[in-house]
Image (cartoon, rainbow, N blue to C red):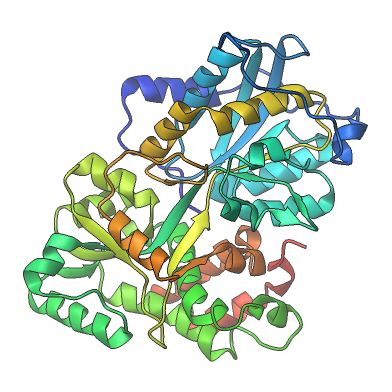
Length: 454
């Protein structure tokens, strides 16, 4: 699922660092590197890994290759702009001979097109995307297997959706949660209980409007947001019931136009649209989140990327999260592996690449700094963010009850690039009266060929 690259409230220093880290590399080809010489050992995933531990005295180390510049394509989400500077600083402290040449792009709009370009000329040494990208590129033989030295520093759950045929091709670094964020104080003041059914939710909507409170904050001007919440609806009404719905769709056994479950998922967008800001199609994410914090709306269907905005606006904002109710009253909170590090099977600098993986997985101060900045959950062992997250108690409760589902299932069944994002544009057109609901469904059916990564 895509999040628009928004720079929330950044200091001038961080912003300047971001521009320096992600700016033009000065090369005429936009920073592409020639990877024509295949590293045979890396290509078959059986290369001998170098020891990347610190020395006995904790001094700086160097790569066996001398001074090395590694190219990095970073597909960033809303939360991520600026973490490249943190990584550069930590890497310079331990391996000063290794330099990262960053190309930072919006994951939703630009990462896939960039990857397609690089597949023709040679991939960067390191790529940062999402867990779902592994399913797209690993089968093409262009990703290197991640060494267990670094994988073992991550949670077991971090491997589940980045492992293909027993080999793991991605290092999942953090995670997001998705559902309905709600104003805890407002819920308490009005005596509203967290809804478990659609009837429960409708009662809250009705009471909100009786009291001149907007039920939902939304920013439908961002079609990526429409695409994101639609997949949330699909997870709990479709994929939790029919895990292979996407395969059945491609086999012609079902369709968007004929599936009652899928039509219901699409129709939830109408429910949000009918009970949100009248100017939702001209409201940006930061303004939307500000209205939520200021008490102008009770709920927002969103993900952890909104936390950064919430707490920047009011560090004392008291919010929780619950899954959007489905037809059967058994919705689960949605979990999404987010930042995922992949490496090229043809890199000429495997030792240096491993040193970067070492820093990312062993530097606890760096990890906490990134988690606190992005307001996301850790996927590394024994490392937890220290920022105050009012919704954490809700997350812990759903987790302990086994009521969390990984959205990678849906994203692998129906990919974002070329499918979900295009469907969202038709949903937006339907909501604005520019096309019929039936036409929006037919348009999704017409994209069957682009629905799968393979």
